[in-house]
Amino acid sequence: TGYFTIDRVKNAMSGFGTWTQSQSTDVPSGEGFGYSLKYDCTTANASLSASAFGIFQMSKLEGQMLQHLKKGTANAESLTISFWVKSSKTGTYIVELFDEDNSRFTNKSYSINSASTWEKKTITFDGDTTGAFNNDNGDSLSINFWLGAGTTFTTGSLQTTWGGNTASNRAVGQVNLADNTANEWYITGVQLEVGTS
Image 1 (cartoon, rainbow, N blue to C red):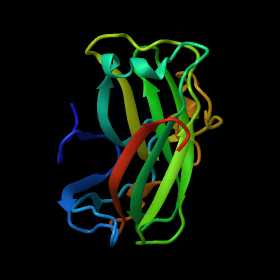
Image 2: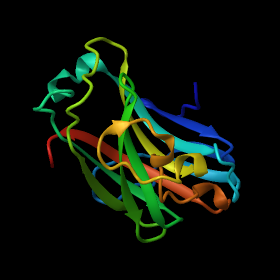
Image 3: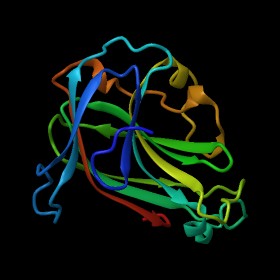
Image 4: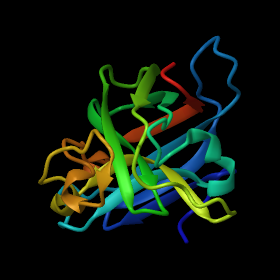
């Protein structure tokens, strides 16, 4: 379920205004990218209900493709995600790794510092020594980019280390990208690598 515009990504939203998604040719200059994914707010929601959320999600990765991460062991590997992002709305945003097999997650924040300017972000997540991924073709790992969230997801403490699924810790500090129809958000060049770089 969800809304799909380009390969291997989806959009999950509830009570988060109305959006147009498109493949855009707006990209960071000189970096070798041909396209980006664009979110354009067409109906705003400046006062989100408690359970509202907006998430851009990379395709869920199969457990059989992730065994080399050694998740659930003392030798669990770190993961580093890098991406280019641009938005008319500056502030704090949240990116999340979610373990679908064990209902565990970890989140990190990043800042969009300059409006309507491409910025590269690189974020490292520690390995998780608890909860191995299933060795099958089922969904095991999601990469979630939060775009906004109600108080159900923002009233705790941001969970920057792996832990159980406590909803209130998932998007603490996240701006509400849906608060104005002038808001846009772009992303391109997403890479997920094993290790700390």
